[in-house]
Amino acid sequence: MSPFHTASDEEIKRGETTDIYFVRTKKILDAKKLDKIQVVADVTASGLPEDWQWGILCGIEEEAKLFEGIPVDVYTMPEGTIFTPEDIHGFRVPVITIEGKYGPFCLFETPMLGLVCQASGVATQAARVRKAAGEKTLMSFGIRRMHPALSPMLDRATYIGGFDAVSSLSGAKAIGTEPTGTMPHALIVMFGDQVKAWKAFDEIVEKNVPRVALVDTYFDEKIEAMMAANALGKRLVGVRLDTPSSRRGNLAEIVKEVRWELDLRGFKHVKIFVSGGLNEETVKTLSDAGAEGFGVGTNVSNAPTIDFAMDIIEKQGKPCAKRGKIGGKKQVWRCSKCLIDILQPYKQHRPRCPKCGGKTTPMLQPLIENGKIVAKLPKPKEIRSYVLEQLEKVQLEKS
Ligand SMILES: [Zn+2]
Image 1 (cartoon, rainbow, N blue to C red):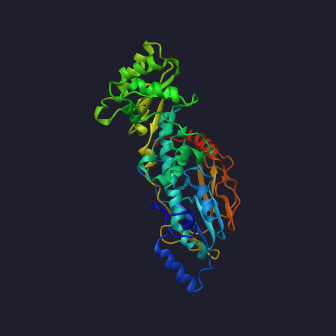
Image 2: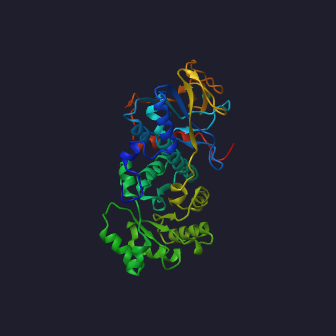
Image 3: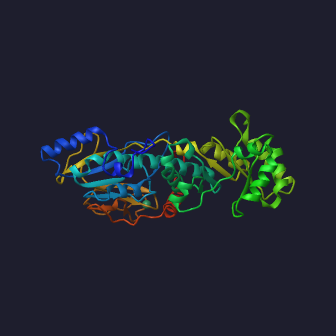
C-alpha cells in the first residue's frame, strides 16, 4: 500500500480499482464459460454538466496505457476532440469503442471511465475559460485543491484545454515544459516588507524568470503596484492582484484604476495579472477591464466530471443493446469544417456532410489492436493546438 490513499500503477493495471460487481460478474462468466464471447462496447455521454454545449475528450493517452497488454481492440476519437453527446440526428455518439472477448476487459470498465470522465471535465472547463479569455495569458493554479497524486493529470488536462502555463513541477514535467509562477504572500510576510521581498526575489531568482510582484499584501493594490514599479523599474514584468474576497469590492474597477495609474507614471510595460477564485465570467470581465493574465485554480481543477458510461451493444456480431442505447458497432463521421457528426452502422459507406456537402472523416480511430498501442500518441502541445483550432468553431452559449 502507498503511504498516501492512492492506488499504485500496478493496482490500477491489475484491475484492483474496480467495483466489486465486475469482479463477481467475471467470476460467474468464467465459471459458466461465457467469458470468451466476443462483444463490442460503446462509451457515450448521456449529457453534459451545467449548460455546457460541448466537451473536450481528454485522457486517451492514459486509456492506451490502461488497455496495453489486454487482448482487445480499442477505437477512440483523437485526444482533444470537441464532442457533443449526440450527432446531428440526435443519436448518442460513442467517443470510445472496445471490441474483444468480454472476460479480459470486464474489470477495466471502472478505471477506463474514471480516466476520461475527470480529465475531460477539466479540459472542457479549461477550454471554456480559454474561450472567455481570448488571447490573454492563462495559468493553471488549481492543483492545491485536489489530491497531490493527481497534479500531473490535472495540469496536463488544463494545458490541453488551452491554458498557457502550469504552476506545478509535476504538471510541467508531464507536459514537457517549465513550471510558471510568481510569489506567494508567505514571501512578503516573511520579510514583513513588500519592497524588501520584491528586491530579494529580483536578486535571488534566475534572471529568465519574469519578475511579477504580488501587490495586495498590506496596502492598497494601487499603492503597492506603484511601489513595485518604482522598486524594480524596467525589470518588473507585471503585478499580480490576488485580493482576498473580503476586500475585493469591484475588482474590475481596481484593475482599471491600477492600469491608469501605472500608465500615467510611465509604467505601460507592467502587465496586470489577477488570481483568486476566478471563473469564465470573471476572467471575461477582468479581461475587458485591462487585466492581461489570469491564474485560474479551483474552477478548473474541480470541474464537473463528464458522465460517460460503457454499454455492450454487440455480441458475437449481433446487436444487443439494452433499453435506451442503440445496437451494433458504429462509426462517427465528422465534417471538420462544420463540426457536424453523423453516426452510422460501422459497415455503411462514408456519408457527405448534410450541411456543406463536403467530405467527412471517420472519428473512431484504432488506439489498441490486440493489446498493442497502434496509434501515435501526440504530445500535449499538439493536442492543445488541435483544441484551439476547434475552439474557434464553437460558442460558450447556445446559439
Ligand atoms: Zn460540412
